[in-house]
Image (cartoon, rainbow, N blue to C red; front, side, top):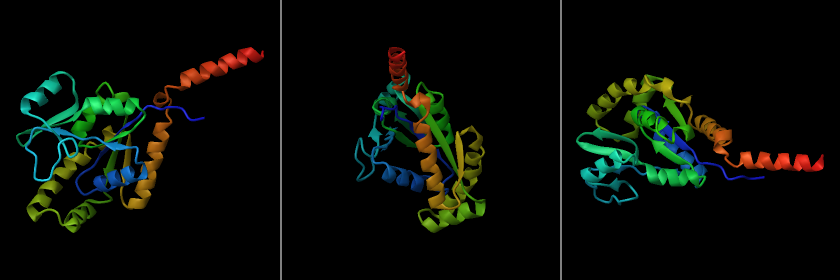
Length: 214
């Protein structure tokens, strides 16, 4: 018997280069019903970016108003611009039984865990097998200058130091194995009693049937 479940807020965090983005893509391909949380920002759109698809582009006034009205699950001020996760579309999705994936840092993760939807959150931190391997991956992907890589490496330990605040921690030494573990965690958490609101009514019906046959 299949019952309607409540969706999860799945948070993936890691230092840059540990594999978070790749694992996020794997999850979205594994389950097409899972959606990626589209962040809101006050920065100007870059060429080719589409409002509502890449970001929700807001004015500072609109962003601050949403924050004051509890419309953001998490938000931060980065390099002169605001970024945040709008609450309404996430709430709508999980109430319809669809999971929402967040690719955010530990500060954003803590804000979501402490929000009104925190009880439906699954947080997972991805660790690299070593610092040397972390740097090798950053260099290999060829996206950043040596200066940017140095800054990312300096920031990595601060991010890693918050591993203990997550529900699960995976060491991404081999992608396929790590992804198998990730799928297992998501599948099991979907079956938690809290995520299955229909269980109460099902047990009630079982009780009624039991009394009828006595």
